[in-house]
Amino acid sequence: MTTDGARTAVLFDIDGTLMDSNYLHVRAWTTAFRQAGITVDTWRIHRAIGMDNSRLLDDLAGDADDAARVAAKDLHASQYAELAGELRRFDGVRPLLREIRDRGALIVLATSAPPHELDRLREALDCDDLVDAVTNADDVAEAKPEPDIVQVALAAVGVEAGRAVMVGDAVWDGIAAQRVGVPFLAVRSGGSGPGELRGAGAVEVYEDVAVLHAMIDSSPIAPLLR
Image (cartoon, rainbow, N blue to C red):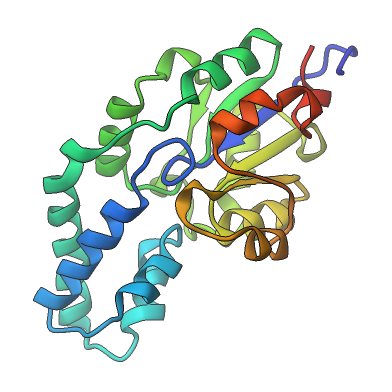
């Protein structure tokens, strides 16, 4: 465990990691693409959740004209807003965050969600009292899988990459963390399988944050704690 007094941090993705929101995004994008006249299979939408919205549109609707892409993005925002009442914090989130804070590590919500979505997420998460810093889409030019969000999250709390870990649910989280040299711990609550998460660099894969909390003293988070 850390004894030298240097700062340590645990960076958390929000969607699919702390909040049961990935499938709300799938529903919102499915409706948005249909209404914008763009045909996209639902399974492909799920595979892209966690990407920056612009990159998601490039991957899923790259052949559509600009007007249809703009319409899809706007429709997603409105559809997701309608579903916001269904946002739910995963079981075990608050006890995990509290233990990490009580044992001396800082907590950063390292997300590329746009500010209007982030406000809803933070309200439903109801853990601002346990969080030291929060990122959002406005902080970077490119979101995950580019490493910018992870770099901004580390800078926000003044912690070096070697004294932090990243907890996320998507391969994009793992790719971004690896590019900065931050160990990636994965949870399956976003719908990705353990094989693909390990393929994206996960050093450990847990069912969800409640299981991670139960195993915290044997996890890669342990060396960061008092």
